[in-house]
Image: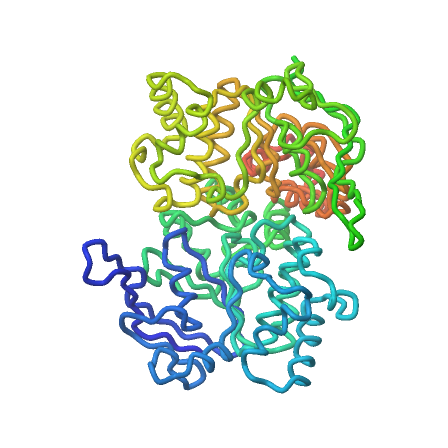
Length: 282
Length: 291
């Protein structure tokens, strides 16, 4: 369980250009949840993510993960990193080693684990991201396709065996098929590891389809916290924050405004098609 | 009138193997098409399909291994034409951070025209007009790194406009932007096109490609499909086989048809779908739906 309490972060505190990036943010994430975070650029999403794995320390407030307060200055950074794995946007730009296996081994190597354990983790992580270990282990990561590189980068984080996996826009820049492949992979890992998975996305279709819980960040504050149905029912508020509805929900909303009687809460194309077809048959 | 003509384009990237011998990797394999002056052409295709290589061939950043590309009649592989070609075709890339060179917005926009050796008064005029054109006039003395992604991309576009090209090639300009930034950039590209600019727009977002006059689908270095968005997005199965997709409105329309709802084949946008569903249904069609 993750408990974020009164989290505030002020950049350049006390200086003339100080700015409040996070303002008294509170939320709880239950074990095994899949959480989507949305917010306009500059809303504070990235600042929040960087707090979750200790890259930034809060100006005030606490983050407790499974009973450990990661904001406590006595908590070892290494322990935080073991708990929370953060996959940055365009993680493939962080690949650097000569071979895929060496790149994935870099994180666990820093944990001081015995070599056999490292090797086992590397194999397991590469397989978890859907790559053939024997085929790719000795290949330079730079020889791989964009989608494969991203998988290797994610494997590097998984090899740390984090209890919480955080992904910042894992599908940015991918074509539609690669986009779904990466999300399916994340979903599969989530189901297999039963970990907490948190992902940031600008794609409302993905947020609606995958999340158990959606957090909406606006101007440094937690504006909404609920199920996709609850969050996407608040259309006017979301639009005022520069956010959109899932595509199907947007069409349903326009149809409702034109007088068609449709139920609320249709988020996917299938749900919308069922509801519209039913309404037309009345 | 034809502005870009690509004929049997083949492009190989050269690498060296472990022994130092050259190895060719074919990125574009026999592609031919034309782009009309003043048109808006979208190019879609999965990662590695050759889209970006094609884009770089369109303004002489890369020149054909075989085949020919002419820009407004100028052969790009003739070194004597290269500056004229680059003057006519400007590029905007995916990552605005990689193409912004100055610490002040207006200096950045002036960079291109300065390199052309243009008179300072004229540069001033071009920079102001270009920044107004992308609605960034109020930011001319700001530092680019303090702007949002969408704003930075607009600065990069202003830099291209200030060169007064006849065509702008956008290589996935919206991939790194949030929804608001994406719609800002698409709107600017459509506005430029309305005012006569030839636009070539590479994207992974099918909704953006749906705004074009003409769509080109690339796969494995080959041109697989070509036509109007309506023609292309009617071929949902073929697109999916190429790891692409159709816009959400097209998906929803086809699922509604599968559920017995009578809809015209031509639906492409959410607006068209909403209109088709809310317009009074002719009597015989209504019967069909209710039966």
